[in-house]
Length: 125
Image (cartoon, rainbow, N blue to C red; front, top):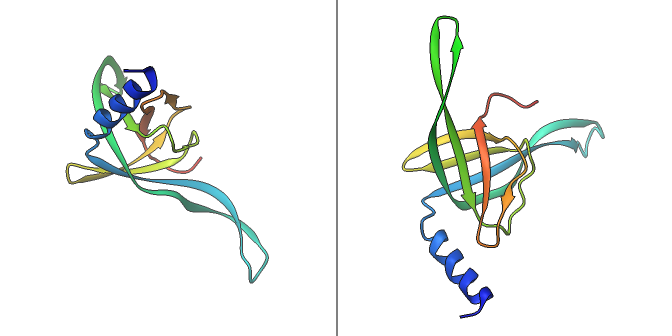
C-alpha cells in the first residue's frame, strides 16, 4: 500500500467518527446595493460541514474572585479541504447540543484532517 492510499484510508476512517455538523461565519464588510453604504455583518461562509468536537479538561485553574475555575480545551476536527480563518464564529451541533464557538488560532492541517482549537463565542471583536 502506497503512502497516498494509506492516507486516503486513514482519512476515511477518521471521517467516519464525525458526529457533528458545523456552520462557519465571518464578520465581513457588506455593501448595501440600495444605499451603497458599507456595514459589517455576519456572513455564512460554510454550512453543514461534518466535524467532531473533542473535549479535554485542562489541569490549570484560574481564580476569579474566591472561586477556582477549571478550564476546558475544545478541539474541532474536520476535513483539511475547507478553510476557516482565525476569529471565525463556528456553530457546532453534536449529540443534540448546539454551541457557538470562535476559532482561537490558525488550524493545524494534516493530510487526513485539520484541528482547530475553539473557545466559547462571546462577541465579534
